[in-house]
Amino acid sequence: MVPQIGEEAPGFETEDDTGKPFKLSDYRGQKLVLYFYPKDFTPGCTAEACSIRDSYHLFEGTGIPIFGISGGSAELHQKFRAKYNLPFNILMDEDLEIAKLYDAYSKLDILGMGVKRITYLIDENGKIEAIFGGAEGLDKVKSREHANQIVNFWGLKL
Image 1 (cartoon, one colour):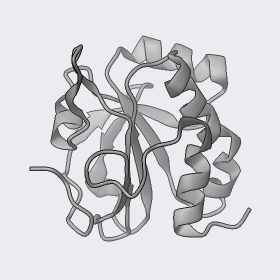
Image 2: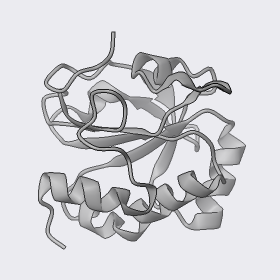
Image 3: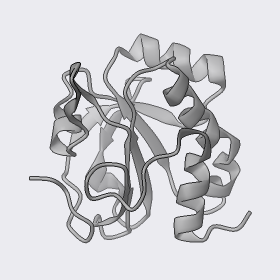
Image 4: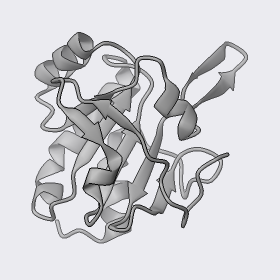
């Protein structure tokens, strides 16, 4: 099943890159950004993460947490966060089960399977309010402008 706008976001539990437990249901009552990206240190993923970093102050003032999620080790995610001074945590998905649950892992092109760049905006009730990227998305994720896409959707003040 592909998650749809208006449906409840699929629940999951994992850890973040620091080893802190994460449970999606713990964030009921507040909006949340969950963005899937293919791989640490690649040009598009770095641009996307830095776009969000550069606008992070807009999210802090609203209490909207942002979580990146990708395959790879906690050590790699920590190095990625440190090198680019990312103020948000990256959730662990080494087996890509969460990516599969959110339709973020699929055939990319003739080269085979991989993680798609896709973002879910989840509302206070745990429902998917918007999707960027993927077949159901409002718009394709624009790596260098992705924070602006999110800010504009929610009408956050600059």
